[in-house]
Image 1 (tube, chains in turn red, cyan):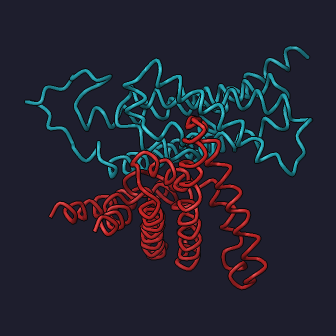
Image 2 (cartoon, one colour):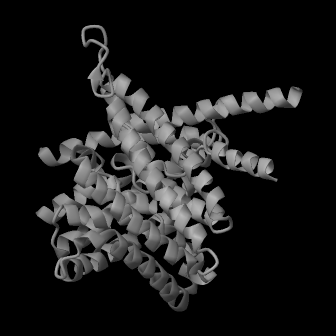
Image 3 (cartoon, one colour):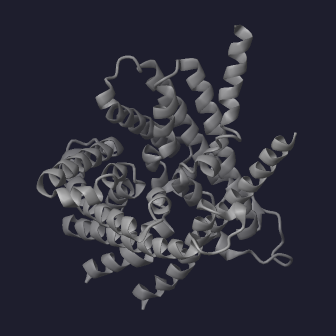
Length: 192
Length: 210
């Protein structure tokens, strides 16, 4: 039951993009086409799940055990960078088609603050191993959902008559604000 | 020569304040811009923490720029930045516990603030230490001012207060709750970008005419 709660909470109610403002760069940068947005979302979900699976043992069995939890930022960012690199190498070898689809997005994920944020929130909330993996996956799903919806809206916006200063990033952010308002409607899901 | 030098240092400093003002022009560092700007004080603290890390990373990276192999430079920079962020985080936690609590996990997230790695890549690794300091100060102060502007608008509309002091009496002014919520951050940020775009398009139109 708790796992379901974590899933719903991380993907809808506390959507990383729309309530914690994590991962705004790819959210704004890669959301101009639905296809790109979907690929980016899938790649991010994949890396996020792996990140949760890798950083939890690092934190619990290395940092806490040797009493150096203050090194968590350094350890996490190195782990994430190494992980992204490994995933990239693995995909290139095993599935060139997938590599072509995800290729350029993978390195960008290293600097996606949602991934590091995920590891930090995981530690802050004291999740156990299974919960952390579910949390990582759910966060990725939430990110995919947000970026996909945004790309759909932006494709429509191309045909809208927007005042010049508002074009581009400005209108994207305002739309994101409205999406954040809409997502607040999910807040009742868990209490009820 | 000295004069020329002084001019370029001033230029490096100044460009961060308007021409390359980070969140509005370069649209870098958007996460903290949106997340911690529900009050002026939080915006200021976040800006200062970022300024410290940016200054430190620019100095160190430009000092070691000749000794780092290009293949490993990103990894090296990230480790340097992560260490500086750890210092900033512990400093805030030790001396300003309420601020540290309000900023929460957004201080550690300075590690992945694209402004810092962006300046390291675009500036510090190609330039000597002194101009890198000017660059860091300019960008850092521009960033702080941007955060404070966001915080100013959101705090005054969302709480009716400024610097945590109530200035608008609740009988006259109904606070706009939406401004404190995440949605308000997006709306204010989007509108500010539009305003910056508008002003600079007016400016460039004026200089075209002249």
